[in-house]
Image (cartoon, rainbow, N blue to C red):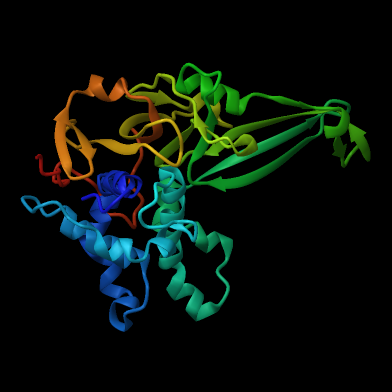
Length: 329
């Protein structure tokens, strides 16, 4: 239910609650059962999310007012979040997943102080959404390769000159020449040289999220790129990876749309596909069944894909046809 400019918040929660492996985890009660915060009353994003999930997914119940989550908006969505103001759904998504990630690490941090990076990548959030990008710089003099690997939870894609999602991905992965003031200092040549730099996906996650960069913040401008960027129900990412011979086929399971002309105004709504294949349209408390073609006609802001051949991480209960379907108004 909209509590006053909370559509950005509602649309993200509705998609996450209908992300099947995440839904299964929340309904299992696994986190709250062993969480210290459940006993001492301290803040825990995962406990709040789990409680909201159980209530929201209770079929037949009236629309839920997410009061407990909204009271902790700054802790869940970042200090820049303010009740009553329109916010960026992508910004909220990133902060919310990070809050859940930190909550999962809390017991380890309290026990050991520092949490090794390898351990940080084992949380539910990183098991489901986490991948790795490889940045490769190649010296054009000696052809020495330098690789850097960075974790990601989603990819932000330029769409100003891209008519399709795949063209936007091609732009993201396009080789860039480093020359002039941007020349590269080669460790083998021991001097500044011309080089090429290119990103590829090194490790694909079970759940792949894309932000189509529709908002322009340059020079304080908050306008929006209003255009169709075509996307499909299936997506083959293999040619965008460091191992193009390996299969990386995904299928669309959710979309978030922004209707309006700037980041600080307008309205967000979402679409999500149930395990049965039925698509639902979520517009705050209004939920209805829609055709797949209706979804594909949308000017998407956030796209959510799941790996077709993925095995759900062992820590997450497997999804099945018993996944909860939303109540239709």
